Length: 478
Image 1: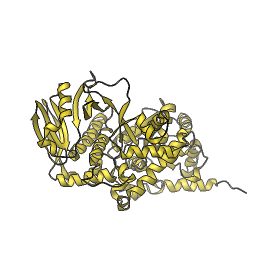
Image 2: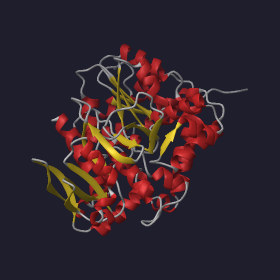
Image 3: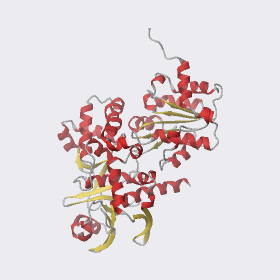
Image 4: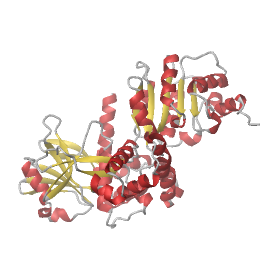
């Protein structure tokens, strides 16, 4: 005879997950882990009760969503919120199988000893994607208990589509991306390696971070490229020694073999896996649907859908192309694809060293990864018959190029600026008087053919973009 799980066991599990009901503190394991730079923004959003919405925390696997939820619990406790008004339930635990959110909430109330007190709760459901129709459950729950705040988390691959389709006006999404290089340095308490300076730019100055030890910063930048997108990898020697096992099994395989097939009804997971492997190995290259279709022997329409799914899962980012005058193409036949986290490639294949042939593409991928954290910013690249430029910023006012960046992992162009023909041509075509070029180690400014070229080490530039992005977002909160 098949037996159902006893309610008493469910209540015991809930009490186990909510240890602060007894001691007023979260587990030391989570307390000692450093906060993501995004925590302040997330805390502000989660505790703003003026807007009646549920918060949906999403992101790629293993970027620290669960840890950030525990940090939120600790912050609420530190602020004096009643420990017995904070409920945390990990939905993926098998003991909660086939139990809806409202029933889980009621079990939580009972387990806490406050069965009839439904107001003033912070209710957190972690790994919500394991509950079928979670969005319907969540809408019903928040409408029934309007004086409590509901927060859910899960993989972007599984949550993003339903949250946008079903939660309009009811859910507020919060995307937690992989680590920036800025966070990678911060979490290891190595900020003494960098210092802030003012970089001349036209008639103004911009905040920039330089270093007195470029060799050490570059060593850390290489570590970041190889395994640094995941907080856990920073502090685990086991992960550092075998990132392939950690990332491939716990990140890539679960998304490609479980999340996406389950969400979109994909039957040929080998086809999807083959496509992602091809993209990962060739990150920062230009693609077309035709070339991907030929390589994978899959129809173009299928490839197009797969690419959209991978982007929705925040594994890749599509970058669109402009021509030499900065104009977009009516038919976007060609595009670049970047991994949102450079360490995905190293884990799937092998870690790189500083002289590896792929370092150019991975440096470009890493720098694009920093820019992808910048809200309301869309980067482009330029390519025409005789040239290409890595990154273009278009003015919001007139959609014309207003800055340009060439990404290199080499110092040779400081002494040989004539080799930057495409960059110079693009600047002249678009009346740009300045350009940025990254290097391996050199920081310098030269004038070449009336264009002021600022050379900046790629590691310093990556740190700067991350730091400035975080500062912009903090300013928006204050």
